[in-house]
Image (spheres, rainbow, N blue to C red):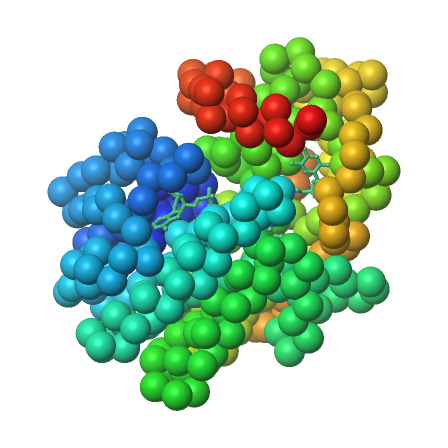
Amino acid sequence: MARILITGGAGFIGSNFVRYWRKAHPRDSVTVLDLLTYAGSRKAAEDLRGPNVRFIRGDVADPRAVATAMRGCRTVFHFAAETHVDRSIHDSGRFVRTNVLGTQRLLESARLSGIERFVMISTDEVYGSVAKGSAGEDARLAPNSPYAASKAAADLLCRSYVRTHGTPVVITRCCNNYGPRQFPEKVIPLFITNLLQGLPVPVYGDGRNVREWIHVDDHARAVDLASRKGRPGEIYNIGTGRRLSNLELAGMLLKAAGAGRESLRFVKDRPGHDLRYALDSSKIRGLGWRPRIGLREGLMETVAWYGKNRAWWRGIKSGPKYRSYVARQYR
Ligand code: NAD
Ligand code: DAU
């Protein structure tokens, strides 16, 4: 039995990871540290409460909150971050504070408290746009959005703590996730919920940008494996090889929701929009991981989840903060 710390455990991937961990490792105790920003769900945090789960509302950039949360923990899974590329274009300061300073504070506390494993949840966006082929773990870092740059900085800080202090950090860089409980600013939940509301879906530019997609549960299994079998100082890409353009993705979602192509709206492109992400994931596959959930099946299940949980996303979409975000986004 061990105590683990999960930062960002009230967000999309973090909350699915807490669920996964409790099933896979029921004897472990879990501490969640989450600030409950707009992206963190109070409901998710409440749902996660239980005999073996402790929830701390706090900021990863606050050393005292971090030290309290880390006390007695053996492993840290660092998911907490500002995560939306479009928001980083309007307000990059918050991204630097949480993603860079927050990671530094956690690394420092991990160093002082002798943490046995620190898993840094980085992202494939650190490689920037991959013109052809796929990026291996040693590919050049070339982030293009303030979000991606802040994650690359955090990723490099982890490297420095391994080299300088011997902190046992494993870094994972995953492709685009989808699944239940994703905040409806990201393309898949935004498109699904718009279609359920009878609204059009905004496709940036010409819709030819390519992303690689993974179900959040497949990501959780890969992170678990990397934490146990991965070597300190190593980086593991986590991808499925399932790449498609935003237009192809929109087509699948329209079909799943029973909508026609008249629901597509081509809107102004995102500045600095990366054209293509593609990962070489042979290293994590070498540890024995394979994705289990096919995209078609996973999308159908995800559309069904948003269909069944309208109260969850309607509450978010009708809130003043979300409405003002959308008003600024499509101005
Ligand atoms: P999310 O935006 O849904 O959730 C982020 C969580 O972090 C929220 O609960 C929020 O309240 C919390 N948080 C934000 N700032 C905080 C702070 N200062 N202190 C404490 N908590 C704070 O994000 P997500 O999509 O679940 O992503 C989780 C992690 O996975 C991030 O590190 C992200 O970079 C990485 N990642 C995401 C994807 C993806 O497709 N979503 C892919 C690869 C990697
Ligand atoms: O690749 C991993 C990354 O995936 C994570 O690190 C990020 O945290 C996560 O937000 C995600 O970044 P993307 O920018 O790829 O995701 P997003 O859902 O914002 O957009 C996916 C694609 O869809 C991208 O090419 C932009 C496009 N898009 C997005 C939105 C929100 C649209 O065409 N219309 C939209 O309204």
